[in-house]
Each structure stands twice: as C-alpha cells, then as structure tokens.
Image 1: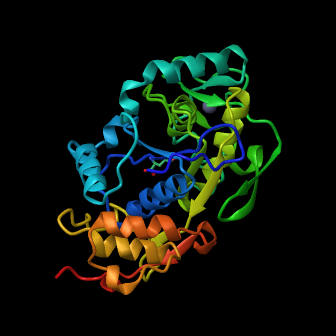
Image 2: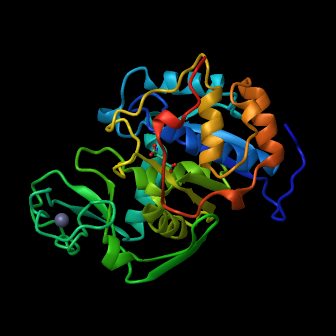
Length: 314
Ligand code: GLU
Ligand code: ZN
C-alpha cells in the first residue's frame, strides 16, 4: 500500500465502506465498496470497514461475516479493526446528551399514524410538522427524539455530483435521532462513527445524497469536522429499480469475483482492459489503482446495469 500522503490537508485521507448487514454483498453494494476503496487508496489513504448494524431488527444473522468474507475474496482489504455499530450505544448516547443539553433535541410522541397526512421528503419519511416542538403531545407514550432544524439552506460540493443544496427545515424537517424503540437512528450513528474513526471522506451510493445535509448539519452542531463527500450512481435494472436485497440482487460469487469486479469498474466509468475480465482480484485492483479517475464516474444518480452483461464465470 502506498504510504505517501498526497492530500494538501494535514489530515491523512481515510475512507470507509459502511454496509448494513441485511444480506450478502451484491453488485450494487460492491460499487460503493470499490469506489470508496479506490478513491482512498489512490490518494495513499486508509480504508476502513464499519458494519452498520444499529438497526438490530433488520440485521440478518451471518450477513456481516459473509460481507467481510466477500470483501476479502475481492481483494478489498481494510485497515484496522472492523467497527460494529451494535457495540457503540454509549457513544451515540453521549452525542444525544450533548444535543439535548444544547436544547437542539426534543422528545416526540408522534406515531406513524399521527404523521400519515404530512408531506414526505425525498427519502420517503414525513417532513415533520413540528407537533411536539414545545413538548410531546402525548407525554405518556414512548417518545422518539428529534433534532430541531433551523430554516437554513445547506449547500455542499459533492465530489461527483457537483453542488447540492437542501432547505433543511422545509425539505427534511426535524428528523429522528433516536427512535421510540430506543434504537439510535442511522443519521446520528453515522456522524458519530465517521468522526470517531477519523474518516476524512465518504464515497457511497447516491441514495444517501439527500441524507448528507442532515449529516453535515449534525457535524456542525456536534462540532465535528465536515468530511469530503462523493456520491456514486446507483445501479438500477431495466425498470429503474435499484439493485438491492429487496429486488433480489444475487450475491457476488466469492469463488470467482473477477468478472463482477471488472463490471463494477466499467460501471464506475473506468476502462479496464477486456483481457483482465477473469484476472485474479489483486491483479485487477493493481490495474485499477494506477488508472483510477474519479472524474470518469458518470455524474448521474442512477446508472443502468444489466445482469446479463456481467462477464459470465467460465
Ligand atoms: N449503511 C448504509 C447502507 O448500507 C450506508 C451508510 C453510509 O455509507 O453512510 O446503505
Ligand atoms: Zn411529535
């Protein structure tokens, strides 16, 4: 691994891949793993893996191990220990306490049904109408905790998608940072973990682009450094559906991941030579590291991918 720090900033580049263990790694999640890996390593940086199992009811037993095994088979070897969100509740609690002390967080007793009529944001969650801003409407109920958002326009420069702007209050609304079932929300956990792991850049799928202003805002109020963000196009099928566990994207072939790695490089706008299609992962990644161009990635939120176009295993 190159050790030269090519960043102008004094902090060493550190990227990460943060899968949710809801199923095995498939082509869609390989894109995020590969893109974050190559961008970090290309700059001589480190690349960490974090298992985002904060939403324990959605966790599939064995999936975390299967994902890690597949990464190894793909030659995507990470630095340092793997962090598991399920073991970090005290850190999330400390951040929550800090927000509550600053009066930026408040308990909310609203149920899904209470919010059924409110408009929805890009991620499908309701834009919170503020019912409990001055105290929970139904204090007897188990409460979620929401972050109080100011009416500001948050703008950031995405390394792939360009400038992104979001009106926090009207497009997202006060969002949940701890759920009524007492599980910490992804938005809070990811910000705390990225900071604790010393992450400097986040390269991930564009399905999380609209979450980024929330995360940047949380970084600001928690006085944490803001990171560099780049959002990759998400692989979609012919009908425009995201490849996911829900759409039954097949798991990667651990015994012969070469063709899918090659396809993933093509998907990311790189030009691996056809002769490498069946090369061992280490050889393919060595090629990718010397040729990697972030600028080659299509600056679109989605990009079609046909499964049949993947090089078939011999
Ligand atoms: N755990 C999230 C997912 O698998 C990714 C979170 C992130 O990269 O910030 O969709
Ligand atoms: Zn409420």
